[in-house]
Image (tube, rainbow, N blue to C red; front, top):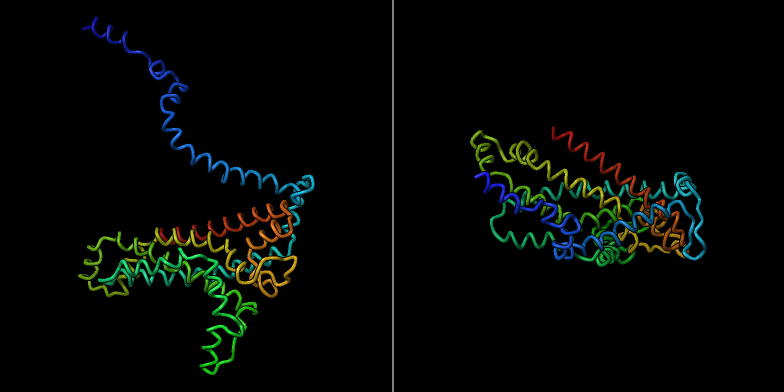
Length: 319
C-alpha cells in the first residue's frame, strides 16, 4: 500500500507546477478574462480616469487652451467663499426637501393601493413606471408649457376659478415648487414600484395574525407594514437624496444655462440655480475647468454628508 501511495504521489505534480504558476493560470483562463475585460476597460476609461483627472485638475487653473497652471488649494479657498455656490447649495437643498418628502409619502400610498387591487396590476405598474423612463428634457418642456406665466394651463385654470395668475417661472419660491413638482412627477412611480416589491415580500400570515388580534387597516399599516418596509425605505431615502441633490436637467431646460449671455441662468435671481448646474456653467460655459472640478468635489461632499445623515436617521429608527 505504501509502495502504491508513493508511486501515486510521485506521479502527481505540485499545484503550481500543474497550472504553470500565476502566468500559466492567466494563459489557461484567458477566454474568461477576455470575456469580462470590456467592463473593466470601460470602467477604467469612463469611471476611474475622470475621477482621478478631475481630482488633479481641481488643483490647477486651465481654460482648455492655455498651459495648465498649478494653483494649490486656491480653487477650494475660493469655493469656500463663493456666495453663488452657497446660494446654489441652499436652492438645491430646498428643492430636494420640497420634492423628496411628498414624493416618498405618495409613493408609499400608491404602492399600498397597488398591492390592494386585484385586477390590471401589470397595467398600473407600467403606468407608474413610464415617467421614470421618459426623457427629462421632454418632461421639462411640458412643465414649462403648463406653468407658463401667460399662456400656461395652470394659470388658465386659476383664471377660470376667478383667481389671479401666478408667476410660476419668476418667483423665488414658485420656481423651486415647479422644479420640485417636476422631480416628484418623474420619480414617484419608480419609488412606488420599489415599495410594491417590498410589500410583496411581506409574509401574508403576518397580516392574518394581526387581523385575528383585532388590528384595523391603519394599525396594521403603521405597526406591521412600515416596520417591515424599513430596509426598503432606507434604500429609497438614500437613493432619492443622491439623485435629488444632483438635479441639473430640470433647471437647465426650464431656464437655460448660458451664464455669459443669460443673466437669468437658473431662473430670475438664480432661484433655480442648483449645485450641478453651477458646476456646468463654470466648467463648460466659462471654460474654468479647474474651478469646475473643485465645485464637483464640493457637490460630492454635500451629497455624501446628506446621504450619511439620512442613512443614520433611518437606521437609528430601525433599532
